Amino acid sequence: MADWIDGYYWSKDGLRLHYRDYAGRDDRPPIVCLPGLTRNARDFAAVADRLAGDWRVICVDLRGRGESAYAKDAMTYVPLVYLQDIDALLNELKIDRFIAFGTSLGGLLTMLLASAGAHRLSGALLNDIGPELEAQGLERIKTYVGRQSGWPTWLHAARALSDSNRNSFPDFTLEDWLAHAKRLCKVNAKGRINFDYDMHIADPFRLPGGEAGFDGWAALEALKSVPALLLHGELSDLLSASSVRKIDARMPLMECVTVPRVGHAPILSEPESIAAIDRLLARME
Image (cartoon, rainbow, N blue to C red; front, side, top):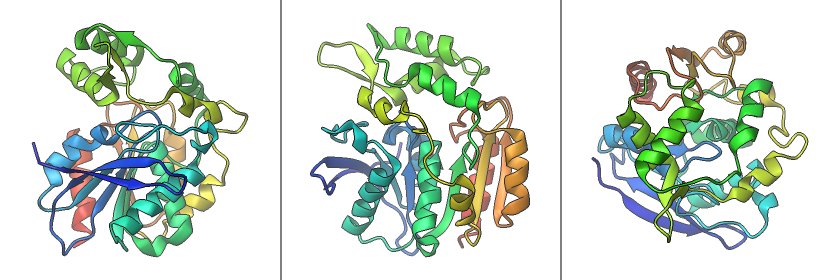
């Protein structure tokens, strides 16, 4: 397991936000990892463990997740504010160019970062996300986001996650589900296992149109000049195979890779994901 430093910085509206900083070579652009809607910096621990040393890896806790502060105003849990927070981090660390790894919501933020200035991106990974979001996947997300659950032990949490997510990860073992639970959850002050995010992140997401709010194709095409990788879970209900084919046709610098027997979203330690990430990083040399 690679070592990291816990870093903290302040948002424009006064929230103390957290990131993990894994050291790497200073002659390469750092990799900035942006997690999904209910995820946190731990989601990229396996990626960072594998790449740290050769690459500096910065894993972000978005506001309201992990060790970042919860917002007083739930309406700040929206992409525009997340982008402002990311810009504050980049300014804090004096990072001019970087490689973005974005899972789900983090991938949408990567697209929007490109829209704001693709020259800052040396490369980009979009993990099971694109300009078109499938209604089935969005409805599934709405059934669980913002609904707190609690379990007495990690084993109970793992079994509950297995029951609700088995279709996305049919090959997961109990050990895999335990690791998944520890990425998603934390032990609260009473010793129970809870999801590690502010339940109010769901408030703007549940508003009409709250899951989108921008032109996805225009945002994606801002990455046209950037070496990029799209990972698609074969069983994904959020990114369809037909959407991947459209992306492949329109994005000449984006390699599209389908990860077999995985839904939304690949955990980035699958053999196909590892090989594709290594090919992307080789293009940075």
